[in-house]
Image (tube, rainbow, N blue to C red; front, side, top):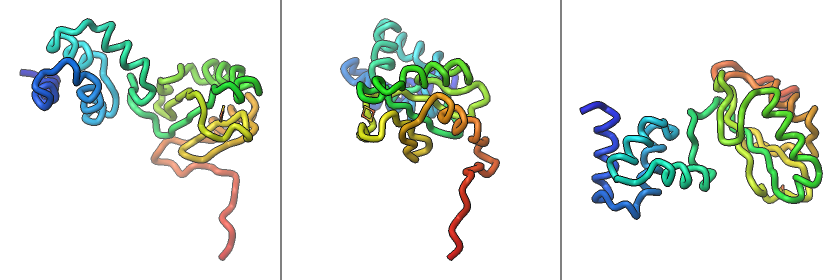
Length: 167
Ligand code: FES
């Protein structure tokens, strides 16, 4: 039995093979692998006898699921109504074009994972982009790209452009 099959068996076993527990099973799979590798999803689909399309419908419905490994940084762009009306759509397009990354994906060099969400609860600051938990308000396509270009791979110190205050 391959490692992949063993893992799927273990996870399915935790829930007695209950198809109704598909979401917790996929959450467990993601917790084990860091994301949902296509081969594992296919294997889970076969093991449960659930069509692959149904699994992918679940994966795309819940933004917490990811189909690609996590990047060194976590970038979330708000595409909620307020942000959208203030230009978040063009910002999203600019990011997709510049970094060839789709929402829910990770850049090829794994520099960052890109998520699009429906509101980050800071509408007064729209449009908002959150990078590693830090809110950037009133972003434009230009400033968003600038921020993303300043990100560094995990092992290198990030260039923040700000200096620590002397204490
Ligand atoms: S719509 Fe973007 S923060 Fe609420």
